[in-house]
Image (cartoon, rainbow, N blue to C red):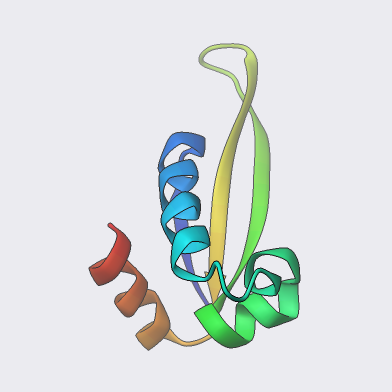
Length: 78
């Protein structure tokens, strides 16, 4: 499994572009299985305690089953 890690800001911008692109098919962003089938990844929020700044940090992790989908995502969105 390939994982791409994004900040909240990066994910917000990408999410907006994807929402525009799939405006005719809103279930792509609402349902986990539809998103996996159409976009090739599932989204999860990862939260951990950062000891350097003594607070929680949060990232968006996109989990890809196929590395080719991850490469396509990087070329298109990053």
